[in-house]
Length: 159
Image 1 (cartoon, rainbow, N blue to C red):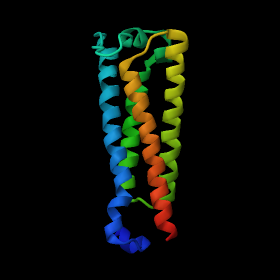
Image 2: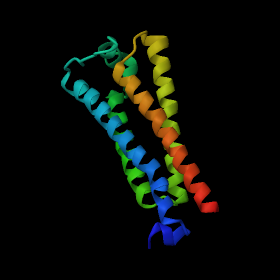
Image 3: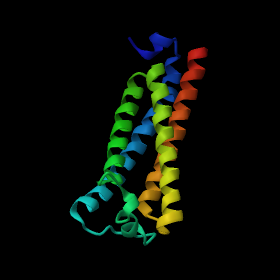
Image 4: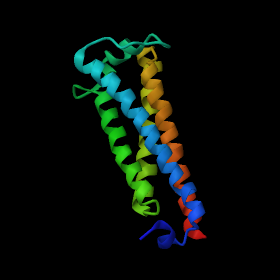
């Protein structure tokens, strides 16, 4: 069954409904690439190329960059992969209340984690990592895209 038939959606509005989930997919791909580059540096021990801010290697070698000995970039990579799958499912099931709620919840957790990691960099490590900032911006944009999707599908479902 198509979305238009499922929710009585005008087919011309269908693009506006799936656009936020496509934005989420694009953002997760940026996050995956960012986390994969940092994870590769963690795995190989090769220094990261820091074009904007010079604190990348200081941040990833700090004691705050690991949880139970596992680099945070690995968790970031898994997070963005999970969000990619969630966004892909949202593109096919935009009106699923469960998926809509989970997208907002997990994107909010990612944004909150980014705030905490920025706090650690500024307050304790006293260096900033370009790749961590890219991830933080991506996390916030992902959260806003999830809210956008939630709002668009809520408005459509009530019409």
